[in-house]
Image 1 (tube, rainbow, N blue to C red):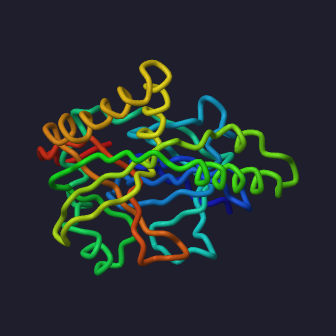
Image 2 (image 1 turned 135 degrees about the horizontal axis):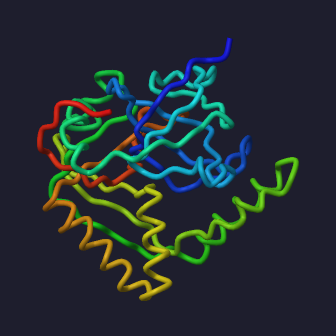
Image 3 (image 1 turned 135 degrees about the vertical axis):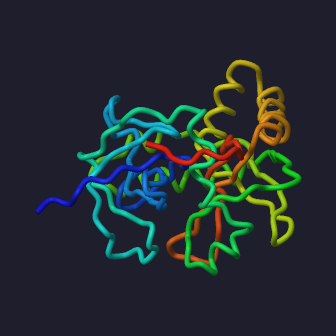
Length: 251
């Protein structure tokens, strides 16, 4: 019997990463209508057709399986050909629905056995450091090697340009101060788009004002998740604009 379909509101779509098994994959995660976290993989985003490609806040439906090699309770293996995009969630309906997913820190989430969480950061600071030529060359070489290991040369994987800056966020939570690399797709995509139009300096200043000022004023949330092979390591996977006002239900 085919697995029952499931629906998830996408909150996390990380920057594409090379995978020896699947080629180009994207870490995606979100929340079911019942308020449960889901981590979806393998998502080869640019292999999806136009109608199946999705963005943050879109609802997606799919046929899931429990993975054999991932013990994290939120993880689901997605039948890629079953993935369908539904309507996005309007801004006015988002606040409040996700409140029960917030934790004071990743330590609190880990104590509860969770590998995905939302937090409300304090004293947010956006940081951009130019990467060295050797770092850029090393990443490109790793990407080329991974693409060449497949049965076919993964052209999509080779088309991903390494970001010339290491984009980070410094913030505070109940555990203290943190500084994490930003793996958010929207952040990197915004940088490339703005840089092509206005240059690097103005692009980075736009991102700084967005995260340090506009998001903080309106409502900012950070989406964090653990690594499968290193469950004690948390990564910053998404920076969300999310109000704190109460809203009882969604969908």
